[in-house]
Image (cartoon, rainbow, N blue to C red; front, top):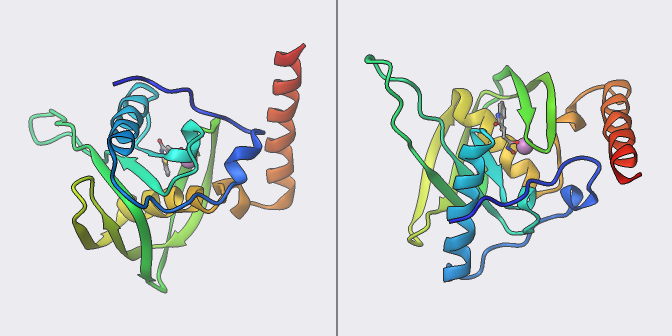
Length: 175
Ligand code: GNR
Ligand code: NI
């Protein structure tokens, strides 16, 4: 396993529409393992393949919470070619962040519940109802697969301000 570099704004690869995974090859399994390791190291609760510069419809996630003893067991999950089948009318607001937009957090309103279909790393197809943080996170990650970032839901003023800040930082770093 290896930690891969997470690309950040203003990297234009973040705007690519990722391609479906056609076959779960050893390369795909290695990518998923590396993404989990990269996600845990960051640390983050989700990661889309494009964030490590691979334009494939592949997501990793771990939403494990501490149990009654205060212990948190890892719950690594891999979603291949995930799709939202339906979503609730009801919405909820979460403060979101993104490893590709470091240290910036804003409230985002999204459907509170979604039904998702995905293939797991063994090729088995699943359908699940997601609510709470799971619903928010899977929507955030599927957005990445479509080149969409959470800042796209903010006002143009806020979005432009964040984008320019990262553009300036990249220019300074290149000097
Ligand atoms: O680590 C992350 N936390 C988070 C918090 C609220 C809503 C979405 C997320 S996903 C984010 C990691 C990331 O950038 N995934 O694409
Ligand atoms: Ni993100």
